[in-house]
Length: 186
Length: 186
DNA sequence: ACCTGAACACCGTTCAAGT
DNA sequence: ACCTGAACACCGTTCAAGT
View (cartoon, rainbow over the protein chains, first blue to last red):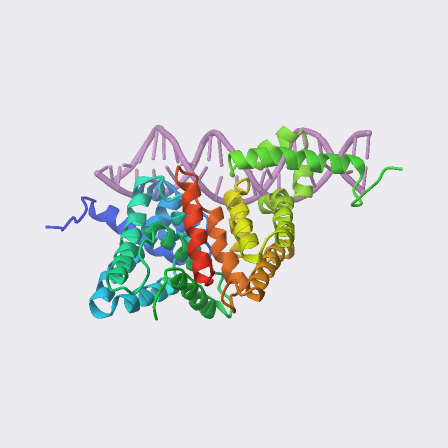
């Protein structure tokens, strides 16, 4: 009767979820928390942690996947409720604020094209940016010809900004710079 | 009679130089080369390596410091020989091509403001960008009010680009985007 | 089919002994 | 004043034994 959404046995799924929950808190507090400490805090053996997430990177990816999925989905939502350029701006602001992931995912945007699960996550983000660009172009709100990969690369610096007093205003300035590069008509 | 340029004993200086030389090759080949392997390859004991460079980051910083100094110095050289906007463009192109450092220094631009030696290196780069911006503004070649930290942050992605077939053209596109954001008149 | 936890390997860090 | 290299500590990874 148990619903097995992903073919995992119930206890395995429970372990997986518990690891993710513990790891999210631990890694946002200190990105270099020993995996052994996470395993212990989650109450699972070393082997269990390692089987679910073969590497530290795989663990980080699993943690942030939901958050990235939500961001990607947000693009079309915003496009339905707002004029294209406004939607794009709101999306960028949201991206800058999704500080939970911070530098954890910055690496994804770097060597992104290597492994499969990385590529998949990265592609979602590119598609979101591409749809926002396309809508703005169609509305004549920005110049044509912008490359989604390039823009995402630049937006990626918003995740690399250290958290300091002027962080929010710096984000705003950087977004304004990028929109200027896109030829945004405001 | 020995000239001690930095107060180091002759053998200590020789060791330091040898470590840097070996480390440069090893780390550009594989950024995660064990420090112990570098020590062995340089023919020094573990303790010697560790005393000269207390952390992996300190070693990387020492390696790239010359290269960064050269880049920073290049700004004023270019400004003397070319119109401001042209100088800025050439400088960015050079920055994109200084691939020897690649991702090694990308971290510097992130949490840059933490330790002292990092800050010093980072400041050099900011000053270079600031001088280029100021010259362009004075010549009316770009809009006024751009923030050097922001621009350097964006230029930093040029160091994060993975090396793939279209890398050079992507660099050029990204630079063009940034210059568009600056309001460059071409 | 999945878990545990001891065992192993590796690497960064220290430090007593040397020159 | 600087170096060596063995010793230590820590952490990622594996695997035989369990349920």
